[in-house]
Length: 175
Image 1 (cartoon, one colour):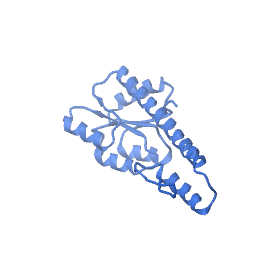
Image 2 (cartoon, one colour):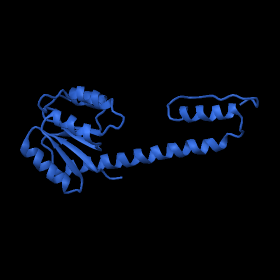
Image 3 (cartoon, rainbow, N blue to C red):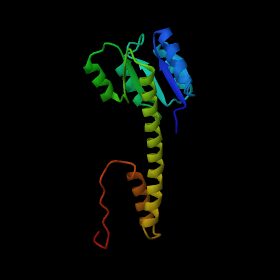
Image 4 (spheres, rainbow, N blue to C red):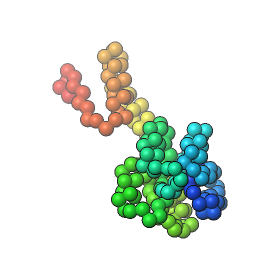
């Protein structure tokens, strides 16, 4: 599924307008933000697929913003736009959950590549989520029986299937 909505948070008005115009030419809705408060306002009103954010956005502590974003159930991908920040800062952004980054000055081609990568990632993530649901449904049909204990086991399997843990189910047959 292609990207539909993007927040472009950039303190430089001219750069923000130019980049927003380019993204709109790709038929993607763009919400323009000049401050971190604008970003929070947009996030409070709607869901977005991607946020491009200036690492030096006024009154913004970018790593704190990552923490806030990670608390959301539906969180957009985040691409910081950096200009002269040390490599350790960029690495900290990735550790905090950045999808990618753009080093200023960047070209239209770099923006287009970032949009394409984010779109592909969203498509794969949604397909994966749909397949997880199908796997759980298939597993439900694999466990035979209609007793209360079997129903409990099916419920437990559905809950555990969405986590990254190893589970051993033992029964009378020795498995």
